[in-house]
Length: 184
Image (cartoon, rainbow, N blue to C red; front, side):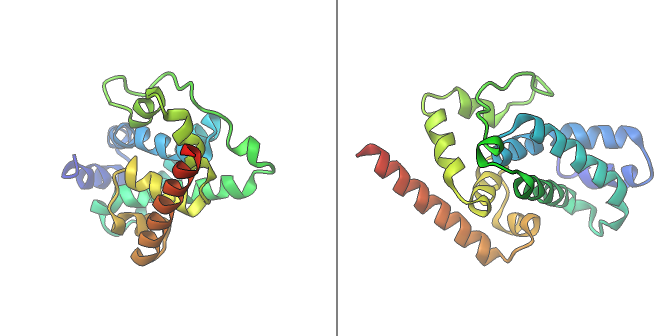
């Protein structure tokens, strides 16, 4: 998959609609899972995925390394998530429960978030993740659900790798503390 991305990006840059379609199919589920995990709002997550690709189409000419398309695309989605987060008036509207997820974009593609939601402790885990500050939640979701490396998360978030390590460490520590507190 990663070998074909630069070829598809090159074709997409030259207005190849099939290439854009393939890139969208390859990334839509991971982008949606990330946006949903960040915003906790299904409609906002769909909007973010759509806006992300619209911006990608507009700005793909500025991408210098086609092999970096995926982190670049997630960087756009990350910025859209941050804008959504900052624009929300009330936290409860931002973090509505999204346990009932239906209609996967591609039924043949496994959805890591669906697997999490169907597990016995999913609601508790979601509640804990929602309590994390946005930067820690973002880093954790990118690392665990997006399977991004520390370097890729740093690129997506536009922060140094050390900051990503710190955010992940603090997120894991906070999650352990919350789990310990719940167990008492």
